[in-house]
Length: 200
Image (cartoon, rainbow, N blue to C red):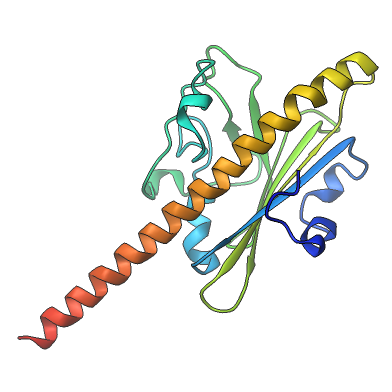
């Protein structure tokens, strides 16, 4: 449950940790992206079903009828996200309770989501850590509180751990490829425009 993360990243205090200070389970995964945080941030803002999706494996996301559509571009109408807003994980008519709310937003630094109940049973944090001027580490930390029933706790871990690992890894790879493709396309367009100007 620490795919891609360094030992320092797995032990670092991250935004959202205080919302569930003693979790029953925690995962911290990370990936390097060849782009600055400001190029990664818009993709995080549009996370959610009926928004930009979760950039993971669409076939798996929709296997149970979640109706996820993963965007391959920045969608301006999904760039406004504030504390208290709802981020759905699946379609509302079939899965009305599968939703998170925005707990905190620090532009180009972190986005923290949580379940609406008090205290939350799940906190999901997305953190952007710059590495020099043109690289970012994207950290995703999940903290959960499991039911007290030992049988349900065991069954939850047995099912949730591998599913969460696979889908979160897919999401990080999906974000990385989208960000880097967009940055490369912008760079190519700028070079072509510059060449065009110099040839006039």
